[in-house]
Image (cartoon, rainbow, N blue to C red; front, side, top):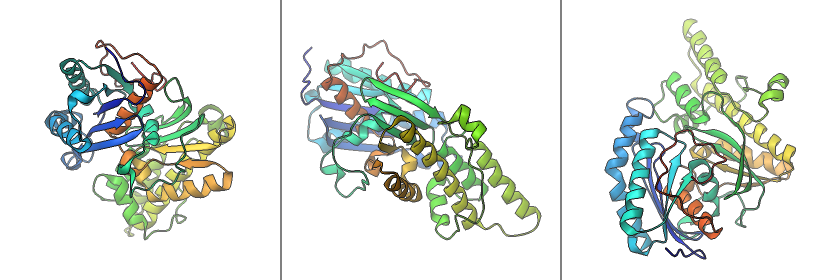
Length: 363
């Protein structure tokens, strides 16, 4: 089986959570990025229900593949390879994507690359093409340099990575020890009687609030914590602090200043995320920070990240927002990078791994 390693045409499949993502790239050029989300189905439950997510992937995969192929203007037979997320993520959701990718690879007689979801978020920054037009990218457009520090923030993950080389050397520096940042946004939104998903709702009501009104705690930021958990995150205590504040106001028969609570909570999350990320940049002597994951859509996070990296002389890179949330294009991009670097395909023996370590870039 001969693979075009110079400029491979790769289809990527991403089903780690509630987005069915299909992307097609040629080398580093983005040709299509189709995403079908089951978020509305989960909203009634206030969070992602794994079984519902898996069933939604089953319904959406074939239409999403057809839409991506049509948008890219190719035929499936033109592909050089298939890339698929095999972890980390929700087991049932991952199995749907893995099964579909294997079926495509066998039916088309194409090589398959099983890749890491988190590393894929970094790969998204490599993509170029017309589909980036109109998107916000606060980083420069030069090629991604190594090493770089990557802060990935989503509903399921809050991770800090040292990326020495995208396809061969990615180290996990720290991660959340309890709730991910996105989960904390959802839970605090629920405390404030705001709908799911919480991130956009917190952003909305925070516009009328004072971010300095309430000093909520910054988890794992005390000297004793930094000695052991310098790059780790914790949002459970922050969430509890918000809950206690709301309860105290309600018990006293006083109105809850929702705008101030939302703005102060958001400020605490942004502060701890960026403090830890910039500490990693300083400690490792890396003047580059890349942000990825769905929570990067938070306007305040992007604003403060720009201010603090400018002050520290650090280059900030943020992929277009359409490539920050879970998507198949980032998986295709990582697959293409592996091919161009000469890596051999995965065998068909791999499976879904909900706890796949970030250092395992390809399975």
